[in-house]
Length: 198
Image (cartoon, rainbow, N blue to C red; front, side):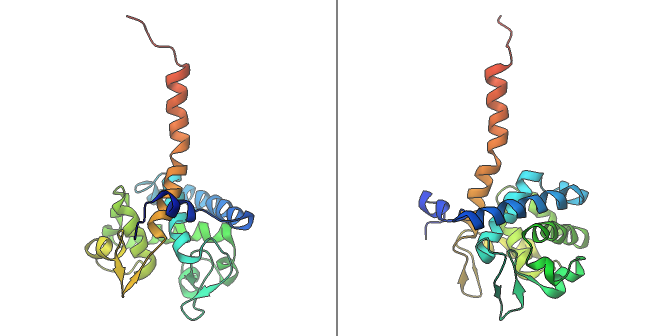
């Protein structure tokens, strides 16, 4: 399967106004979570954090705030189990909120970082996304995320016979968008900042 074809990446974008709204509200929740979680600053800046977590939302529930998987146990955009979100300080209603799901998604990363140094591999470019996906599958108590992340969650990785068809194309879509502000700054500097002529 071609995870990185333009058509696959475009198919990983939100489809329709409701999904775009959910994604943008989720991103605001991620930004608040990032601002209040200094430990996460070590592994991701604000735009990378948004890209990492929206990419996994594409795979988890296609940007939908409703809907549950795992026989009704996991719900919302990030497919949180009730005991997971409660242990992060949230409640059942927060699983159906795009904003609070984004916020608690960052808190989940923060919790993992505080419990096991191996989760700091999230900081590694590209590979870090496989580590985030491993976190969502196994939880922060998993003892050795580095050893399984790429084999199970990398492009073409298989977990229990299941291939994640949209996780990587979703991440590429959001990471590309998140780099646009930096590209605009570089362009503005090149275009408008005077250079000395020798």
